[in-house]
Length: 76
Image (cartoon, rainbow, N blue to C red; front, side, top):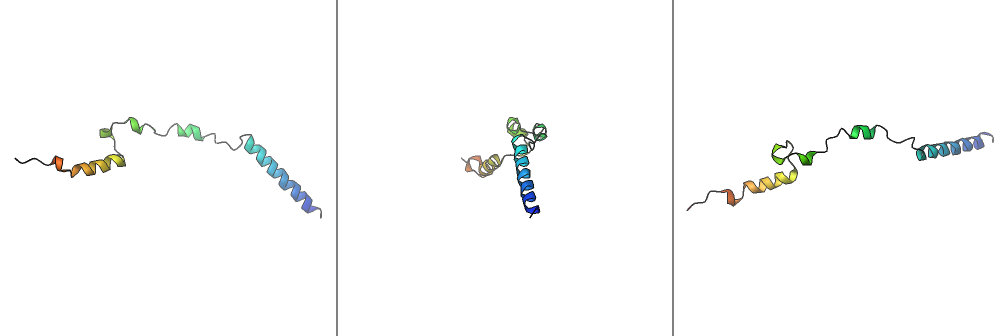
């Protein structure tokens, strides 16, 4: 009879403490923004002819362009 109310009080205190910690930013990611600055996000500034990883759209256009009849030499 004594342990059940004590455990309920402890559970409620734990939930309240957890919600307080979340509201006050105790679980915020402090290292994520510092590491995110190191990620390379300037791929759009690299010229297409200098890229080592060709975009899929450019590859599909290149595949269509390779077999086009316009590239064949004209015969007169």
